[in-house]
Image 1 (tube, helix red, strand yellow):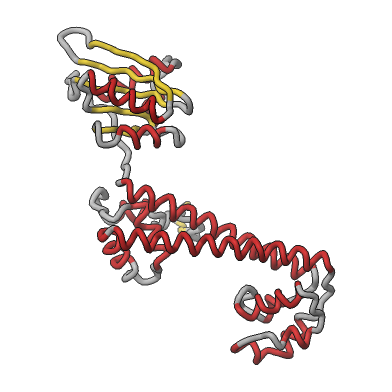
Image 2: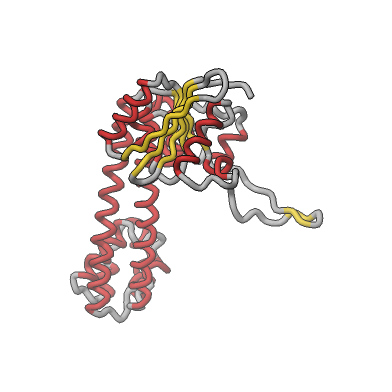
Length: 312
């Protein structure tokens, strides 16, 4: 079989150790050099020096968990790195040791049999961390809002049946008054703002409940959590704007995305983080649509098309 990379290395990466196998092609059997390294930054730099001593230019490792990331960060810029999907590599039976694993990875790499995963540039990886953290906070924000609604229902306060947004300015003012001990439904309804004031009679009826100190304690705790999460989301949004100011390509991609109907700044940043500012790595428009999770699936049986209930 043809050798594409005469000097290459396969890495078997774990949480606290890395087993490296350097293959050097020659007439007959290739030379093998195997060594185990730790995963601290100092030891990873020793790995770089060791590989450079053999003239290695290509390195491959599996994309298992998150343990490959610090290795990639240190080796990036020194070698051409292939991050391979672990499933096809592990498909070969009988290779159950770290030494055999790294040798097998090196052999596959040497003959060009590994397909590399798409790894975006460092700034895009940073952006991905930020947008995913924001998504997690937004989901937690929704969960807390639901718990607030459950407490209100337990106190027989039907605020949600009158106000479309129980956590808007009017809703928050009413909640603050309830936590402060206000029990008069008339005074609570008088805190409504804007269009909600037109529903004052309905609001008064909705705010006549059975509120106990237990409910006030829970509402106060949940609102503290809500405000904290909102402040953290604001910090993440500010950081995203800062990256857009520092990197012109990100700003240009953002401006293109928000021209799409239904795509706001939050969604645009998520698309850029997941696909990159440059989508040239996708061969057709269908590929980034599927990657972004906006491509509807098919659900057909016996010639009948059923409702689409999910996206992939």
